[in-house]
Amino acid sequence: MVSTDDDLKDFAANGLALPAGGVEAVTLHQGARIWHADYGTGKPVILLHGGLGHAGNWGKQVPALVAASMRAVVIDSRGHGRSARDERPFSYERMAGDVLAVMDALHIEQAALLGWSDGACTALELARQAPQRVAGVFFFACNVDPTGTKELDESNPLLGRCFTRHKKDYAALSPTPEGFAALLADLGTMQRSQPDYGAADLAAIKVPVWSVIGENDEFIKRDHAEHIAKSIPGAQFREIPGVSHFAPIQRPALFNATVLEFLGGLDR
Image 1 (cartoon, one colour):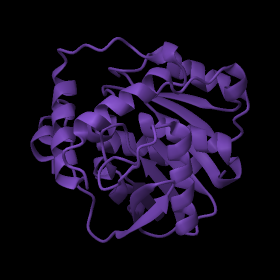
Image 2 (tube, rainbow, N blue to C red; image 1 turned 90 degrees about the vertical axis):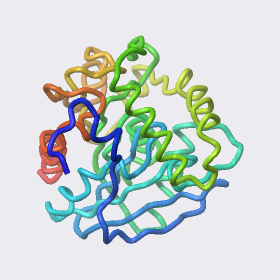
Image 3 (spheres, rainbow, N blue to C red; image 1 turned 180 degrees about the horizontal axis):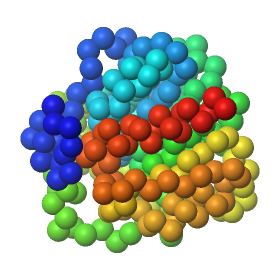
Image 4 (spheres, rainbow, N blue to C red; image 1 turned 90 degrees about the horizontal axis):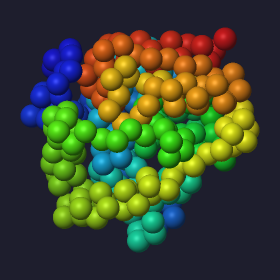
């Protein structure tokens, strides 16, 4: 396995997989079958992937968390990876409910949430719904309102490589392998209107939050990530140098060190 993959060529060619040894299960919630896997022991950390992806995209983070004596739980979001969905539209509120259902099924009273892109929005929504269940949110590479996104550069080869990999993985994992185009369209509908948190919404969040962004993020504006940190009480901002929206894959050692710093701070 390569230690860095800045251009995502290895990811595009080979994808990522979770380590062996996870305890896999399915939880039923609001018309969806939510697949998840559980690794290690210790304080629980729930990892929530980005749109179009799946839990295997955390393949370089799970071993680091287990090595740090933590319990890592990965979830395929409804309609992604091995998880199925019903006909209801996507919403971060519904996906946050899915995470809570998995926590209940695994008898996890409280967990830290590591969210990437769409998964970060799901994590923050859960922190709003049930703050007593959330030890903290590592909010990576995501916006909280429409002003935070950049106009995409469609010529960027990293975006093409990531999209192609997601499409291949969906076909290989999904119970509805022909449904990628519908997933893409339905996610787009959600993302055009959600999230849309105002100042009062952010000020009401009462759990520890780090707003984190890669130096070269293709989707999210740096000043928006800073705005999130300034708007949530006690939140902190971090920029990871030399990486983009795909930092967990590009430079996992650097990304993991940032995550472990955040998690270590929750114990203080």
